[in-house]
Image (cartoon, rainbow, N blue to C red; front, top):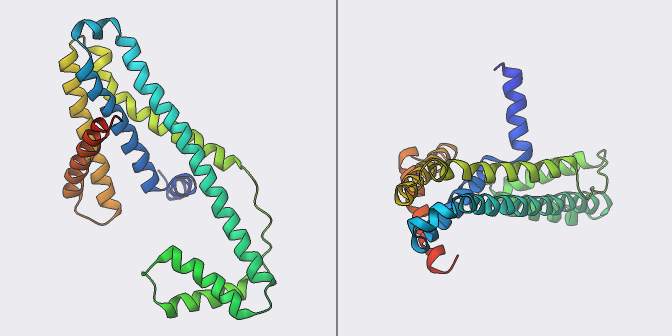
Length: 230
């Protein structure tokens, strides 16, 4: 892959879903399927499994598909809020005669965004720079839904649904219920480890420990979900 192509791919990833968003979607997909596999283990006999095999494969896929669409819509709503916030901030800065009020508006938003990672002096310096540049910038009223928003819905849907497929392969190829459950659970643990390992890389943490921690968190969440009726 050339540098130019790699740059485009990186921009594509960040424009639609961040690393954290993608990992969160994959983790949710894995946990939902593992919860359903857990219920399957408790409620079915081998005879029931053979008769209902197709249904039991379609149910987790349907559940993940529904969640993918719901979560995609939530991302669209969040993006609408973000665009509206940027527009309101630009308007308040552009039309406020009192520069002190404008500074306060910008600094409040910056403080909530960066937390304690910047000093007050740094935030004030950034605020000054924004005030210098905002006048020539014309920010139009935000659109309701954009093509990018629709693509986020599609991408979220694909991510969550595709996450279910590796976990369901044992049920597609095996007629032994217990063996299929065990193999699926092992695949799920492997996927959770991969999620944690990748998260550790992005978060500058120990990747192996992060992978193990994510496996433990995933198992605990699955157990809690089943106990609470999921």
